[in-house]
Image 1 (cartoon, rainbow, N blue to C red):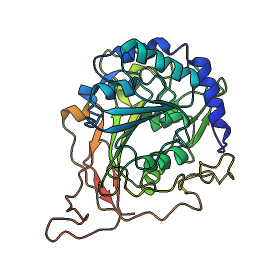
Image 2: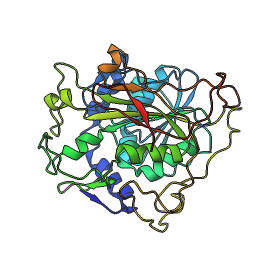
Image 3: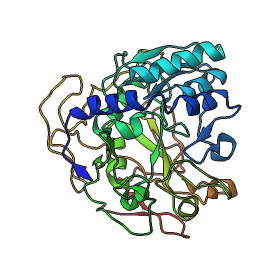
Amino acid sequence: MTGHDSPDHVLRNRAAWDAMSAEYEAPGRRSWAAAEPSWGIWGIPESAARILPDVDALDVIELGCGTAYVSAWLARRGARPVGIDSSPKQLQNARRFQAEFGLEFPLIFGNAEEAPLPDASFDPAISEYGAAIEYCAAIWCDPYRWIPEAARLLRPGGRLVFLGNSTLLMLCAADEDGVPATERLVRPYFGMHRFEWPDEDSVEFHLGHGDMIRLLRRSGFEVQDLVELRAPEGATTTYPHVTAEWTRRWPSEEVWIARKRGRRGRRGRAAARPRGSCGPGGSPTVPGGPPGRPLRGGLLPDHAPEEAHHDEEPCEQPDEGDRAVGRVRLVREHRDEDGHPDRPGHEERPEQELAVRAGDRAEPVDR
């Protein structure tokens, strides 16, 4: 069920995850011990999903880290991760695992919607709920607050990678816990934002694809990829809200990959966007700020900045590995150091949207 935006979701979700932390300690330990990263409730290995960028020697922020197993994966790949989470008990588990596995990196108690960290401090930012279902920003933080905050934290050229429930699953998911999704749409697509469930006190956030694309672009990102995860043959999960049979036909989870616009400069000296410029309730740095109007039907908040021009983004057909996870990869024009097209005769074009039909090649469609 959807409802109006309210700042109470931070405290409600913190209390819910503190209460559930013991339940997720064992899954968190298994993820820490895993030899290879895996994604989502179906445990799709990174070698098949190909989601993580090269993070060697990069500063990485994990938004809503929970037990911080993603940060542990990144540290083993040469990154310098920092994890932030709003649940003290989840962070206690994370510190216990750090000692158990002999891997140290900073863990911060805080809210991903207003992180107590400097501007332009990180290269990638990652949020993933995974097999251990963590309190990640991608689901339990308001996207109109945490995505602009991620843009503030990233350096130009830095990637944002986040995994959550697919939009289609949220349209088909039952209100009751333990009841799997069916083929029937049970709630409207337009106006998706805040979700509350009758048997839980936590609050989730999910957007339609159009609203998500517009939010990312207004926050300073270029969308590079949308990976729709498909359950492998024979996969199982302990979560009852969706079946493997359903997920073999439709995606239950999706991964957004976006890149912050701008040229890379010296570390820590890049210009940063102000906090919360796309949030519906004023700057998230001001606790209890005035509530703005919620997004409905794709409308943006009154104070959202004008959207910048972008170039046509044609798509290429996915290869066999991409089809396994439902990937459509964007092919961007080559540009010189000043951001201009480097192909002779190529002119700037107004923004266009992509329409993708099942089995068809993606084509740009004028608005």
